[in-house]
Amino acid sequence: MIRLATTAFALLSGLAWSQSLSAERTGPNKNIVRSAEGTILYRRLKDQSVRGHERWRLMVHPDGTRTLITHNDIFDRHVVMNAIIRVRADFYPVESMVAYWNDGRFKGTGLFRIADGFMYAEIVGPEGRMTQRLAVDRDRLSILTHPLAVDGWHGGSYDRAKGGAQAIPVINLDAIAEGPRPVFGSSFKQTWHLKGTEKITVPAGTFEAERYDVGDFQVWTMGPDRILVRFSWPKFGNEYVLETYSSNPK
Image (cartoon, helix red, strand yellow):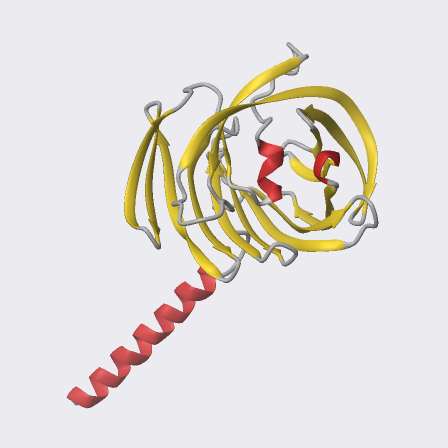
């Protein structure tokens, strides 16, 4: 009798679990309002030869925050970078995690959080475990993690109504420096200048994109999520173009 009761209970429990699991797997994920993903091609301006590739995935959440996950492989420089960054609806950074490899050696990882006017970092690498606290701008800010998909977000606080050249504070993470240097963040400013909207063709297709001049390079982004379409850097003879793209608006 006990054995029969135990068997019946197990069957009922399994059925309940199965029904619950089935219910969880139906419909869209409530944590994602819309999403997009794609790849970026790294190439030389002179002869269009390939230097590397990057894969990225974007998720926009119900509270307006955005998460961007990136992986790039710059075989031309023997560099691998993995980065996750989450920003508010206005592109102000909340947190980021990065992991870097250079020339066959592990450079380090870092977890960076922004709160109350400071960046707090926990960094681990060949030099050991370290922490960092850095005062940051409370109104405008971006984190330069170095994968290119994030670079369209640096101008996220650009005031279109004001126009002209605007200085935007940026935290640069030490990703590819030579020598035993940890993945510390340092502050500088980028000057973004919206030049207008252009129709631009890249391997992923033809898009209406905003063009920004930023110092000695140009950036084209599209849509409310500031998807990077093209990044041109004539000073170093390189460009980065959207190679594949798909989106899932909801």
